[in-house]
Image (cartoon, rainbow, N blue to C red; front, top):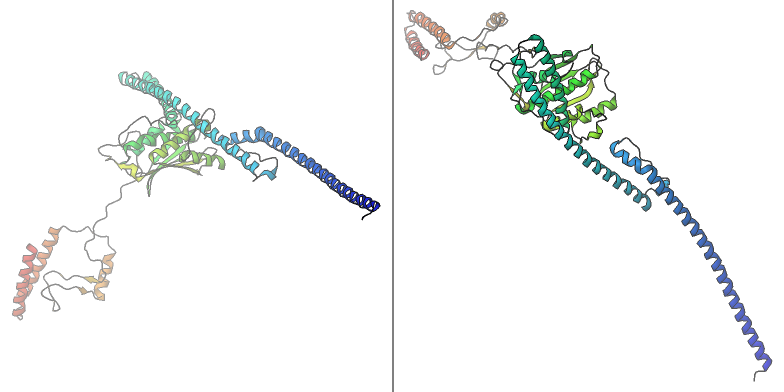
Length: 463
C-alpha cells in the first residue's frame, strides 16, 4: 500500500508541473498578443499612410492632371503632369488613374467635335443666305454697269462691284470651311483665266504680276475651275497681307511632268518652322478642321484650301521659302484635271497675260529613208553584173565617193520632194540611159536586153 504522505507528495508534484505548464502557455499567449498588437499598429500606420498618399494623388489628379488632359485635347503641345508618387506607375492604382484621364480626353474630344459640327451647320446655313444676297447684288450692279454710260458712275459701280466680290469671297471661304459646296459650276476654262479670276477678287490685285509660260489653250476641266480660283485667291491674299505694300507678288504658270503648277512668290517676312509645319498640315487637308482651331477671329484661308485639296485631288505645298525672302506657295494641278481649249475658237480673256511659250517649229522630213552611212542605192532601172533576178543591189561607197559626200552632209537638210517630182526625175534618168545604150552598136545583145529592162522600168515608174 502506498502511504499517505507519498501520495500527497505525488499530487503536489503533479500540480506543480501543471501550474508550470499553464504559466508557460500563458506567457507564450501574452507574447503572441503583444506581437499581434505591434503588427496591427504597423498595418494601421501603413494603411493611414497609403490612404493619405491616395488622397493626395486623387487631389493632384483633380487639381492639375485632369485640367491639363482636357487642355491637351485642343492644344496637343500641353504637357500633362505625372503622378505624385512615381512608384504608382504600372500598379493597379496608377493604371486606374491613367484610364480616368484617357476616358476624360475621349469624352472631351467627342463633345468638342459635336459642338463644332453644330456651329459649322449654323454657319453654313447663314453663309448660304449671305451668298445668295451677294449674288443678287452682283447681278444688280452689273446690270447698272450695262445700262449707264457715265464714266464717273461706271467707276463708282466698278468699285462697288469689287467690294461686293471681296465680301462674296469671304462668305464663300467660310462656307467651304464649314463643308458647303464651292457655290458655282463653271464651264471648261483657260487656266490663266482661273488665275486672273482669283486675282480679281482681292484688294491690292494691282501688286500681282502673272507670268504665263503655259502652252496656248491649256485649260481646266469644268469642276476644277472654281476650286482653283478659290485656292489661288487665298494664296495671293496671304501673300499680299504678309508682304510690304511696295513689293510685288509674282505668279508663274508652268508645265510639269504630272500636269501644271501655279507658283506664288512673295517678299514678305516668311514663316518659321513651326508656322510652316502648321500651315502645311492645314493645306494638306488630312486632319479634321474645327472652327475652334482657327483662332479668334478664325483665319479660314488655309483651312479652305485644305478642304478643296482633299475634295478635288489638288496639291498645295508651303514648305519652301521664296527667292525674295518670303514664302513660296505651289499649287499642283494633276493631268487628269487639265484639258485643252482651241485658243482660236475660244481665246482667253483680253486682260489675261499672253503666254511666253512659242510653238515648237516643225522639223522637215529627211530627204531619204536610208540612215546607214556609206551605203547608197543604185538608181532604179540600172542593174550591174551582180544583180539577181533584175533587182537593184546596194553598193558600198568608195572612199572617193564618201569624201565627195562629206561636204554635202554639212549643208542644211532640204525638205523632201513630192512623189510626182521624184517620179519625173527618175523617168528622165531612165530615158537618157536607154537612149545612150541603144546607140552602142558594138554591144547589140546587151543593148537589146538593157532596152527591154529600161522599158520595163519606165512602165513601172509610170504606174
